[in-house]
Length: 286
Image (tube, rainbow, N blue to C red):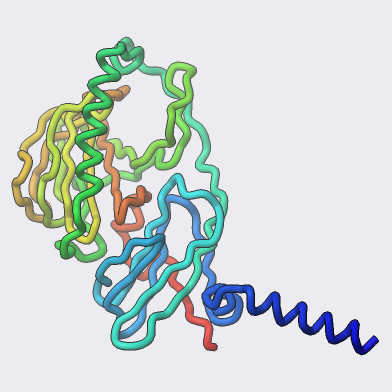
């Protein structure tokens, strides 16, 4: 009996020793906060200077870390960290499954409804250009939260995250931005200071403008009737980027507005609201 008990104790000790230190810390001293793909979490702590998640790190915004979760992020645990004047701290996000639903759309007789081989090659060139935009080095933030709005007034948006079925065919990915029913010809506005990193007619996106706002935040506006800016131009919050239209894969005039932050595509509505409403990490004392 004594020998058996000793073996059990040795086995348990070996198991504990085999667990990495961060995993042990996560079990006892790390806060865990639930989150959904396409949303974000914040962590506020005095003295915070840097934030990290999934191998990336960036500067905090006013002693606050924001952790965006890509719409395609699979369920599971993601470790996040913050540090500054004190010891580096860790917490965890538990990404939960979330079904945004499905939407069936009937496209009119436009090239985007039945793209040719040449159309698809054109789209591939568009995406190659954008891949360079996503890979740009993250510079200092030129914005604070909340962001400005891309149109005034800004009606309620819809369709973020929906799986779309175009003329009976399921799209390869969910809808990555939000559609706003803004009247045709309305000015489309910069939501913050930034630099124009792409401004051109694209096959599916139509007339599109992409703005780099620093800190890895890129905003994008699609389906414009016209573009009023050019690549390399510095814009200020509220500047006119173009006008609402129905170019590209569109069934009628509206504004598509999207956000990509630290390479994560999230629902832009969270950045238009009081940041205090964003779910926050609560530390667990050791």
